[in-house]
Length: 105
View (cartoon, rainbow, N blue to C red):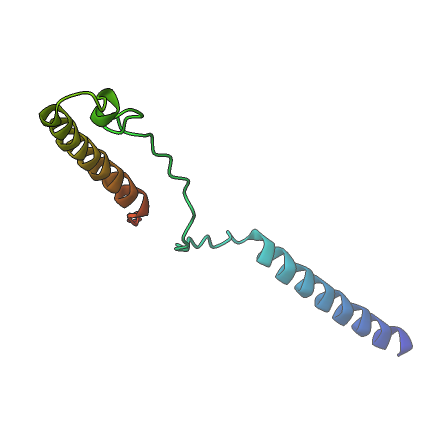
């Protein structure tokens, strides 16, 4: 009788162990589910702008002297204004391009 009870307990234990082992092995055999998530996160980007050719070190006024006639000096002043406006337009465009938000596709 004792042997009969022990063999039933041993069989039950073997069944429990084998079912548990099969459950663990079946869990390992399945393919993992791969989920791709898009995380939108702002990333700082270094913006390098070169000085445009319109921006000069020496403008038209620097090339005239006080001894020149007033018409020449006046023309130099007007030319300098045009040169500085051209430089400002290029620099504003560069700053606008650096500050523009990049669209993520």
